[in-house]
Length: 109
Image (tube, rainbow, N blue to C red; front, side, top):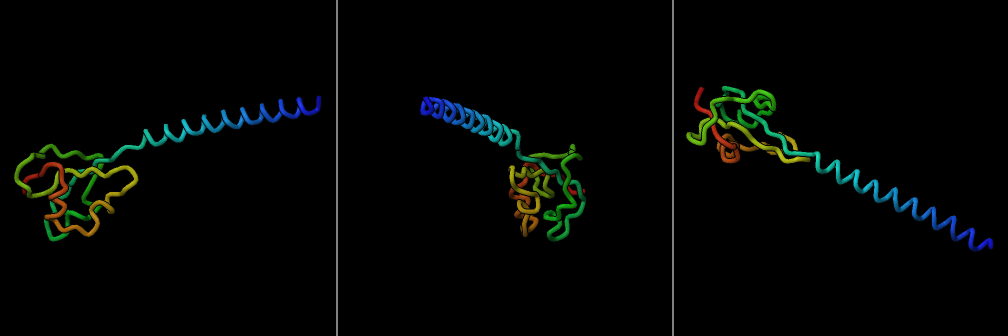
C-alpha cells in the first residue's frame, strides 16, 4: 500500500513539473515573437565624412517625407535587426558604406 501511495504522489509531481515546463516554453516563444526589427531614419543635414554613422543623426520617430529610391546622396532609413543596435549596424562604416545599406535615399539639403 505504501508503494502505491509513493508512486501516485511522485506521478502527480512529475505531471505538475511537466505542465510547468510546457507552460514556460510557450511563454519564452511568445516573448521571441514580440521582438521585432527597428527602423531608424536619418534626420540630419550633415554630410561630412563619417557623419552617416553618427547615431545622434538618426531617429525612430521622425520620419522624413523626402525619401526616394534614386540619387544616393543621404541615407533615408536603416533597419536594425532584433538583438542588435544602431551603433552595431553602422559601426565604423564610411558614408558610402552606410548609403549601400540604406533603404532609399534623401536628397541634398
